[in-house]
Length: 620
Image (cartoon, rainbow, N blue to C red; front, side):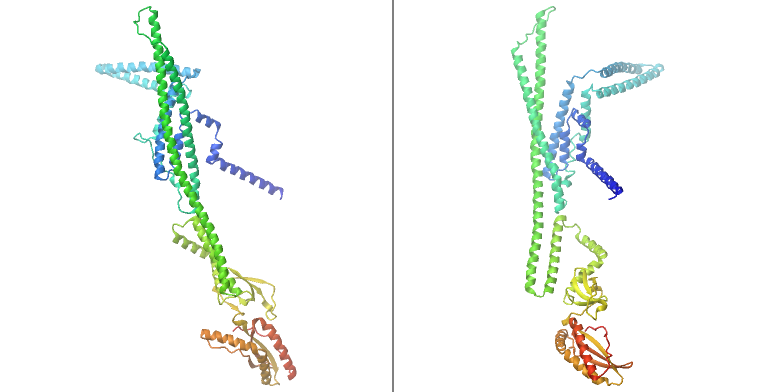
C-alpha cells in the first residue's frame, strides 16, 4: 500500500472513530456520563429534591394496562405529596438557616432597609394627599392631584427597587426562603391544572413504546427490550422509597430521643411560681427568667413534636409509594415475562419449522425412491420437493419474524408486479426449468439443438442449461471443447430440438454419384439391399416404438424402412439414401455404410464419386 493511500486510510479511520464517539456522546447515556461536575453540584445544592417526582412522571408515561395506569396515578399523587413535604421542610430549614453576613449581603440589606423606609414614607404621603384631594376645593384640587400622581410614581419606582434588591439578595444567598418559595410557585404553575389539581394527563402517554405493535417476533422483541428500563426504574424507585423510610425513621427516633430528654430535663426543674413583679424585687426577676426558660423549652419541644409528626406523615407516604412501586413492578415484570414466553414460543416454532422441513425432505426422498427408479426423474422430483419445502419453511419463518402484513393482498400484488418487471428473465427461466423437467423436456446426456447451438446436455439448473458444444465438428461427433450456457427461457419463449427422445432415433442421409454411362437403378437396388440389411434391426425397433406412440396419440404409424431415390445431376446421376439410426450411433452407422458402398463400387467397377459429406440429418 502506498504512503498516500495509507495516510488516507488513517484519516478516514480517525474520522470514523471521532464520529462514533460523537454519536455515543450525543445519546442519553453519553449525556449522563459526561455531565459536568458543576451541573451535578448545582443539582445537589438545590433546596428541594424533585427527582422522585420526575422519575415517577417518566415511569407513568409508560403505563400501558388499566391496572398500571391506576397505580401510576396513585404514585403521582403520593410523589406530589412528598414534594409538598419537601417544600415545607425546605422552608423550615431556610427560616432557621444562619445566613453568612458578607459585605455584599450587608450592602443589599441596607439598601432594602432604606428603600422600605422611603416606601413607608411615600405610602403615608399618598394617604395624606388622597385625603386632601377628597376635601380640597377646585382651585387646589388639581395641584394636589398632580402631587399625588408624582408620589405614586415615586412609590412604584421604590417598590421596583425593593423587588430588585430582594432578587439580588436571593442571588447572593442572603434570602433562602425566597428561593424556596419561588420554586414552590414554579412547581405549582407547571404541574397543576387551571383548577389547581395535579395534572395526570401524562399517564400512558408513551405506552405504545412498551406494547408490541403486532404479534411478530420483532415487535415483541422491541417491546420486551423497552420494558427493561421500566422494570429497572421501578426497582430503583422502590429501593429509594425504602431508603427514605429508613432515613426518616432514624431521624424520627433521634428527634424522639431529644424530645424525651427535654421532657426529662423540664420535669426535673421546679415549676415557676407566679409572683407580683415589684420594683427592685430580685425574686420576681428570677421567677420571670424561669418562666421565660420554661416557655422557650416548651416551644422547642413543640417544634420537635411538629417535626416528628411531619416525619410520620412522610414515612407513611413513602410506605404507600413503596407498596405502589412493588405492585406496579409486579405487573410490568409479569408483562415482560409474558413477552419473553411468547418470544421463546416463536423461537421454538421457527426451530420446529426447520426440523419439519428437514424431515419432510427426507421422507419425500424415500417416497420418490419407491415411486420411480429412473435416476433422472428421481433427481427432478427431489429437486422440486427440496425447493418447495425450503421456500414454504422460509416463508413461515419470515411470517413469524415480521408478522402478517396489514395489507397482504396489496403487498403481494405490488411485490409480484415489481419482481415480474425487474426479474422477468429469471422468472421465465425458472418456470422454463419446470418445463424442461417435464415429460417432453431434456435430461443430462441428451443431444440437443438450442438456438442454433448443438451439443450434449451436461447440466440443467434452475435458470440455466449448460451444453457441451459440437459445433462445426458435428459430422465427426467430437465436441469443440466449449461449454455454452443458455437461459431456460428458451423452453417457453423459443424452441429446441432433442435428438435423444423416442428411443434416440433420427433420419440420416447419404448420397453418391453414378456416371452417365452406367445404369443407376441396378446400383440403387444393390445399395438398398445393403442399407436394409445394415439397418434392419434399427428399422424394426423404431417402427415398433413409433407405432406405440402413434396409437397412443391417434397418429398413423410411421415406416422406418430405408428410402432410395435417383435423380439426374450434372455429369451423371445422384443416388440419395435415407435411413433411420440411433442418435448416438449415427457416425458409426455412416462409417460402416461407407465401407459397404465403396466395396460395391469396386465390384461394379464404378469410379468412387461418393459425396464426402451429407446434408444435416432431419429429425422425425
